[in-house]
Amino acid sequence: MGWINKDKCLKGMKLDLGSGNPAQGEIQPQGFVLNDIEPHPNIDLVCDIRNVAHFVPKGYCSEVRMSHVLEHFTVAEGVEVIKMVHTLLGDGGKFTIFVPNFRWHCELLLTGQDEMAVHYAFGGQLDEYDQHRTAFTPKILKKRLEENGFKVESIDNNTSISCVATKLN
Image (cartoon, rainbow, N blue to C red; front, side, top):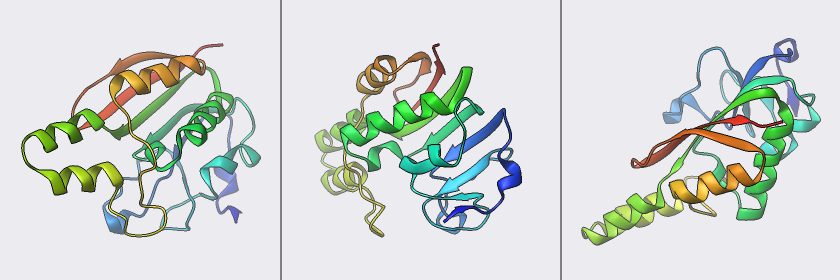
């Protein structure tokens, strides 16, 4: 589909990839250009994340945010998404990412909460996009980011992993 609000495609913009549907509880951050594969309310750019680079010039973003999106890709696809984010960011750009923490899923199993562990590990499966195809621990996420041109500034180890990384030149 492409741009709904192309006037928001400005050098230095903040881009939220996989913004989702606020009616389903998704948080769409203020001040960001919003992308999703479906034209949910407030979405500015409708396309598969893997095609965002066709619509946003290299080095145009000061920040890219992804919340609970990267786990929906295979390992190889996820690496390509990380590489694409690297090209979208300008020098020293910030990449904020949230993914489920597989270590927490394992803790759920160890405490007898099997169904909850499986649910969080494999996604809600509400539609064709709501399925997890890989998993992350802080160690795995940090490794993938560092192997693809990022310096991890902070990473936490809660039920979800939140990480802030900066683009290395």
